[in-house]
Image 1 (tube, helix red, strand yellow):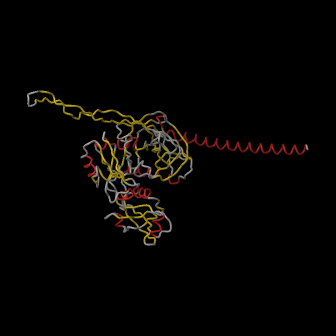
Image 2 (tube, one colour):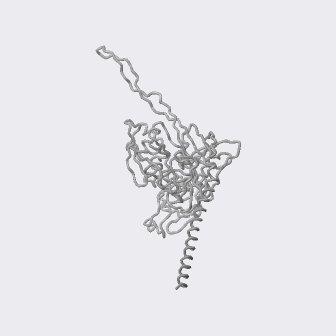
Image 3 (cartoon, helix red, strand yellow):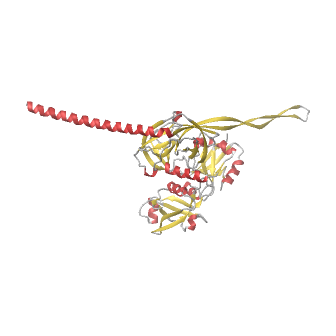
Length: 468
């Protein structure tokens, strides 16, 4: 019996030792993870900057001009005539984040952080302050490039490859939420290729649950090697704060924009000149395609790159440059991001057979040209010319209308529900064909309210916007 008790006690002791070893192993894993995060913070945070912006805002002022008058009975008085006075100017401050990408002071951030800035002050992790200048920005992708000058070499971040990022990988978001500088949060990649979230016209966002809050905009999203894989840009929220869904611009896309801004001072985009739609299961069966997927050409624009390449209505594009095309928004982004006059190698399904076609892209008309005016500023809206690829996707037959490029937060347009990427097809029930007609129709509005017909991919609806 004693021998039996000894055996049992030995077994229990052995299990306890195994359990203790297992717990110790778990603790070691946590300790190693924490140590890795701490090392990333030491490497990265010196190159993460606080961006302080000062913008001049003009507020319209109204008053009366008094004019003497005399009526038919000889009575005299003062007639009050309404008039617009000199607008008052106020200084408005904003804050955001950015990160240094080269030892000579180039900094990536978001367009909305530095837009219309009169003064930009950049504060480094060591509290040094620099005046920054805007090299260029691109509202259509929300990327901006600014620069500071320092005779000494500046700390900078290594850039990773966002194409290699996998869903489920650890990522860390660095920035200055609510003005709290040098903040680091951790999470995972929740999804990739988010292109229809209404943040920017050409979106291909990384979704993450790493905490991103107001002030984080423009800061880096880092992988476990401390390399930048994205630019923190926006959050989905119903409260104004973190709700577990944040979006970052892939760094590969941002670097394409940066390179164009440095070399050419502007952004040029390509267009094929086709109306397109996604291929679902029913369409795939109708066209004899074995599985759903691909981009169906529903129309080809006259004198376009697509027409010159002899693409046809009813063609289904399944690959571009050897890679599957994905959905409409992703395909449109890929085409637009290639330089004009690029040759795209397309694999097309036509009449039951696969065919290889090369198409030389053309420059998008109106690329980077944003229409703006005092009235648009009051509404909080910027519009751009509508390219053929977007029109039918968003439910606008033909190339009729203008594209919403930007919507100011808390503006009348924002409160009415307008979002970047939507199409405005008419104003006060008058159809609009281009930016010029849009501006003309807007200038004819008299009662302080504008009735827009808006298409957003789910159909068309009327939206009333009050002009402040």
